[in-house]
Length: 60
Length: 131
Image (cartoon, rainbow over all chains, first blue to last red; front, side):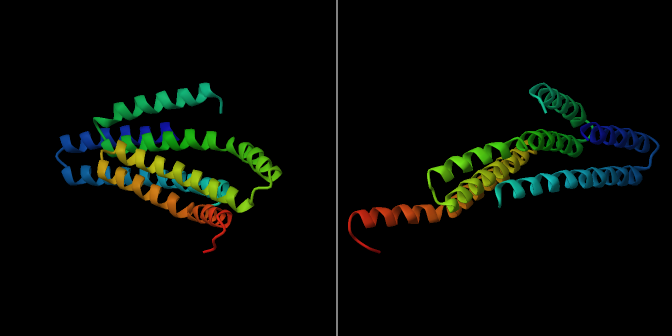
Protein backbone atom coordinates (compact mmCIF):
# COMPACT_ATOMS: atom_id res chain seq x y z
CA UNK A 1 0.00 0.00 0.00
CA UNK A 2 2.81 2.40 0.88
CA UNK A 3 4.66 1.59 -2.32
CA UNK A 4 1.44 1.97 -4.33
CA UNK A 5 0.86 5.48 -3.02
CA UNK A 6 4.50 6.45 -3.46
CA UNK A 7 4.42 5.16 -7.05
CA UNK A 8 1.32 7.22 -7.76
CA UNK A 9 3.11 10.24 -6.34
CA UNK A 10 6.19 9.72 -8.52
CA UNK A 11 4.10 9.14 -11.68
CA UNK A 12 2.03 12.23 -11.01
CA UNK A 13 5.17 14.31 -10.43
CA UNK A 14 6.73 13.10 -13.69
CA UNK A 15 3.52 13.73 -15.64
CA UNK A 16 3.27 17.15 -14.07
CA UNK A 17 6.80 18.07 -15.14
CA UNK A 18 6.21 16.75 -18.67
CA UNK A 19 2.97 18.67 -19.11
CA UNK A 20 4.45 21.87 -17.73
CA UNK A 21 7.45 21.58 -20.07
CA UNK A 22 5.15 21.10 -23.05
CA UNK A 23 3.20 24.19 -22.09
CA UNK A 24 -0.07 22.60 -20.87
CA UNK A 25 -0.25 24.04 -17.41
CA UNK A 26 -3.99 23.48 -16.88
CA UNK A 27 -3.68 19.81 -17.74
CA UNK A 28 -0.71 19.54 -15.39
CA UNK A 29 -2.79 21.01 -12.60
CA UNK A 30 -5.66 18.66 -13.37
CA UNK A 31 -3.28 15.68 -13.35
CA UNK A 32 -2.01 16.67 -9.92
CA UNK A 33 -5.58 16.99 -8.70
CA UNK A 34 -6.55 13.58 -10.10
CA UNK A 35 -3.53 11.96 -8.46
CA UNK A 36 -4.41 13.61 -5.18
CA UNK A 37 -8.00 12.34 -5.37
CA UNK A 38 -6.86 8.79 -6.12
CA UNK A 39 -4.44 8.89 -3.19
CA UNK A 40 -7.10 10.32 -0.91
CA UNK A 41 -9.53 7.54 -1.83
CA UNK A 42 -6.86 4.94 -1.01
CA UNK A 43 -6.19 6.76 2.25
CA UNK A 44 -9.88 6.80 3.08
CA UNK A 45 -10.22 3.01 2.93
CA UNK A 46 -7.22 2.64 5.23
CA UNK A 47 -8.52 5.21 7.70
CA UNK A 48 -11.97 3.62 7.73
CA UNK A 49 -10.47 0.20 8.47
CA UNK A 50 -8.45 1.77 11.30
CA UNK A 51 -11.54 3.43 12.71
CA UNK A 52 -13.68 0.27 12.55
CA UNK A 53 -10.91 -1.70 14.25
CA UNK A 54 -10.61 0.81 17.06
CA UNK A 55 -14.38 1.04 17.37
CA UNK A 56 -14.75 -2.72 17.70
CA UNK A 57 -11.80 -3.10 20.05
CA UNK A 58 -12.52 -0.31 22.49
CA UNK A 59 -16.30 -0.20 22.23
CA UNK A 60 -16.45 3.49 21.34
CA UNK B 1 3.88 -8.48 12.49
CA UNK B 2 7.26 -8.82 14.13
CA UNK B 3 9.30 -5.86 15.30
CA UNK B 4 11.68 -6.37 12.37
CA UNK B 5 8.90 -5.92 9.84
CA UNK B 6 7.53 -2.93 11.71
CA UNK B 7 10.91 -1.19 11.76
CA UNK B 8 11.36 -1.96 8.08
CA UNK B 9 7.97 -0.49 7.20
CA UNK B 10 8.73 2.60 9.29
CA UNK B 11 12.10 3.30 7.74
CA UNK B 12 10.83 2.65 4.21
CA UNK B 13 7.89 4.96 4.75
CA UNK B 14 10.15 7.69 6.11
CA UNK B 15 12.52 7.46 3.13
CA UNK B 16 9.69 7.41 0.59
CA UNK B 17 7.93 10.32 2.23
CA UNK B 18 11.13 12.35 2.38
CA UNK B 19 11.97 11.69 -1.28
CA UNK B 20 8.43 12.56 -2.39
CA UNK B 21 8.26 15.78 -0.40
CA UNK B 22 10.15 17.79 -2.99
CA UNK B 23 7.79 16.90 -5.83
CA UNK B 24 4.44 16.26 -4.17
CA UNK B 25 3.99 17.40 -0.60
CA UNK B 26 0.36 16.19 -0.28
CA UNK B 27 1.14 12.66 -1.40
CA UNK B 28 4.19 12.55 0.86
CA UNK B 29 1.91 13.21 3.84
CA UNK B 30 -0.50 10.53 2.58
CA UNK B 31 2.37 8.03 2.42
CA UNK B 32 3.33 8.85 6.00
CA UNK B 33 -0.25 8.50 7.22
CA UNK B 34 -0.77 5.15 5.49
CA UNK B 35 2.52 3.85 6.89
CA UNK B 36 1.53 4.78 10.41
CA UNK B 37 -1.93 3.24 9.94
CA UNK B 38 -0.41 -0.03 8.72
CA UNK B 39 1.97 -0.21 11.68
CA UNK B 40 -0.80 0.70 14.12
CA UNK B 41 -3.27 -1.84 12.71
CA UNK B 42 -0.71 -4.62 12.76
CA UNK B 43 0.07 -3.97 16.41
CA UNK B 44 -3.34 -3.16 17.79
CA UNK B 45 -4.76 -6.58 16.92
CA UNK B 46 -2.43 -8.03 19.57
CA UNK B 47 -4.14 -5.86 22.13
CA UNK B 48 -7.29 -8.01 22.29
CA UNK B 49 -5.45 -10.71 24.28
CA UNK B 50 -4.37 -8.01 26.72
CA UNK B 51 -7.99 -6.96 26.95
CA UNK B 52 -9.06 -10.51 27.79
CA UNK B 53 -6.48 -10.75 30.57
CA UNK B 54 -7.24 -7.35 32.06
CA UNK B 55 -10.99 -7.93 32.03
CA UNK B 56 -10.61 -11.38 33.64
CA UNK B 57 -8.43 -9.86 36.39
CA UNK B 58 -10.93 -7.09 36.99
CA UNK B 59 -13.81 -9.57 37.00
CA UNK B 60 -11.98 -11.71 39.56
CA UNK B 61 -11.58 -8.66 41.81
CA UNK B 62 -15.32 -8.02 41.49
CA UNK B 63 -14.97 -4.54 39.99
CA UNK B 64 -18.02 -3.19 38.24
CA UNK B 65 -17.86 -4.08 34.55
CA UNK B 66 -18.93 -0.56 33.59
CA UNK B 67 -15.56 0.63 34.85
CA UNK B 68 -13.76 -1.66 32.40
CA UNK B 69 -15.79 -0.21 29.54
CA UNK B 70 -14.96 3.33 30.63
CA UNK B 71 -11.26 2.47 30.91
CA UNK B 72 -11.19 0.91 27.45
CA UNK B 73 -13.09 3.80 25.93
CA UNK B 74 -10.61 6.27 27.38
CA UNK B 75 -7.69 4.27 26.01
CA UNK B 76 -9.32 4.20 22.58
CA UNK B 77 -9.94 7.95 22.64
CA UNK B 78 -6.31 8.51 23.61
CA UNK B 79 -5.01 6.35 20.76
CA UNK B 80 -7.22 8.02 18.16
CA UNK B 81 -6.45 11.51 19.41
CA UNK B 82 -2.73 10.89 19.44
CA UNK B 83 -2.86 9.52 15.89
CA UNK B 84 -4.91 12.40 14.46
CA UNK B 85 -2.93 15.02 16.34
CA UNK B 86 0.39 13.65 15.11
CA UNK B 87 -0.89 13.52 11.53
CA UNK B 88 -1.88 17.18 11.72
CA UNK B 89 1.45 18.02 13.31
CA UNK B 90 3.26 16.29 10.44
CA UNK B 91 1.24 18.31 7.96
CA UNK B 92 2.49 21.47 9.63
CA UNK B 93 -0.81 22.44 11.25
CA UNK B 94 0.20 22.94 14.85
CA UNK B 95 -2.97 24.77 15.89
CA UNK B 96 -5.15 21.96 14.53
CA UNK B 97 -3.02 19.34 16.26
CA UNK B 98 -3.25 21.13 19.60
CA UNK B 99 -7.00 21.54 19.24
CA UNK B 100 -7.45 17.83 18.55
CA UNK B 101 -5.36 17.07 21.64
CA UNK B 102 -7.53 19.38 23.75
CA UNK B 103 -10.69 17.78 22.35
CA UNK B 104 -9.33 14.35 23.28
CA UNK B 105 -8.59 15.48 26.83
CA UNK B 106 -12.07 16.92 27.24
CA UNK B 107 -13.71 13.79 25.85
CA UNK B 108 -11.69 11.54 28.15
CA UNK B 109 -12.76 13.73 31.06
CA UNK B 110 -16.41 13.49 29.98
CA UNK B 111 -16.12 9.72 29.58
CA UNK B 112 -14.58 9.30 33.03
CA UNK B 113 -17.08 11.57 34.76
CA UNK B 114 -19.25 8.70 36.16
CA UNK B 115 -16.13 7.38 37.92
CA UNK B 116 -15.61 10.71 39.68
CA UNK B 117 -19.24 10.69 40.71
CA UNK B 118 -18.88 7.19 42.16
CA UNK B 119 -15.78 8.22 44.11
CA UNK B 120 -17.62 11.22 45.46
CA UNK B 121 -20.58 9.05 46.47
CA UNK B 122 -18.27 6.62 48.25
CA UNK B 123 -16.53 9.42 50.16
CA UNK B 124 -19.87 10.94 51.14
CA UNK B 125 -21.23 7.62 52.34
CA UNK B 126 -18.06 7.03 54.40
CA UNK B 127 -18.41 10.40 56.09
CA UNK B 128 -22.04 9.67 56.82
CA UNK B 129 -23.53 12.35 54.60
CA UNK B 130 -25.72 11.83 51.60
CA UNK B 131 -26.02 13.86 48.43
